[in-house]
Length: 260
Figure 1 (cartoon, one colour):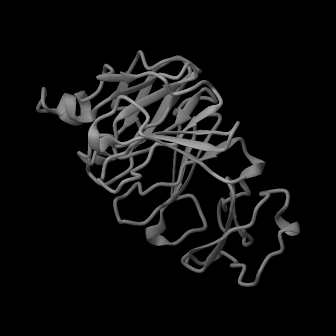
Figure 2 (cartoon, one colour):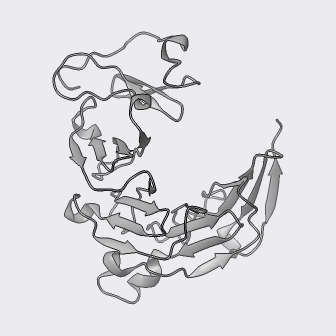
């Protein structure tokens, strides 16, 4: 734990943090209490540098990921004005370790993931103009290494995942018109010796029939084969629809209706 950070050791009431989140969930990061819903806060106090503020005080998206490959998730935010701030778990939470600027405005949606298979999350955004940018962790952050255009506008929502099990996240979007597009990382690596930089650039596959804007994409490995499956959640009837990767994509294999 870093010096200068006052830790909340008791239970904080939900009312006392109502301005930050609506549902209280207590997680342990070292001995720091973090309250998470879609937002999180860390107790601050001493005056030793820029402590982490409550997320609701800044226009920023939470982008927690393992950016240094130590197997621990780091705290991070990407602000609406393009700053990417990271507080590494390796030396204790409480202050931003690094701040990188120039990562896009509010239309640049953060999608950090391990796109080159080095077990470190890369900085990445997909813009409403259809450009996907990646800054690979392997050579240090600070500047985009690659940019790819043609990935859809604001109605094409980025959902990167490892759809083929090669341990690299693939570029993917699901449109409000129900088409799921995938650009596989492996496709480029078979064509070039500089695979991390030239893997992407064009969609390799597209699948239709995935609902409209009310069908929220929720890809994940639902059958344990180490490949992400296509899936959506329909809030209108509280149902999930899944297409398992194990037998190839192309149609919904199961529909699960949850109790309200």
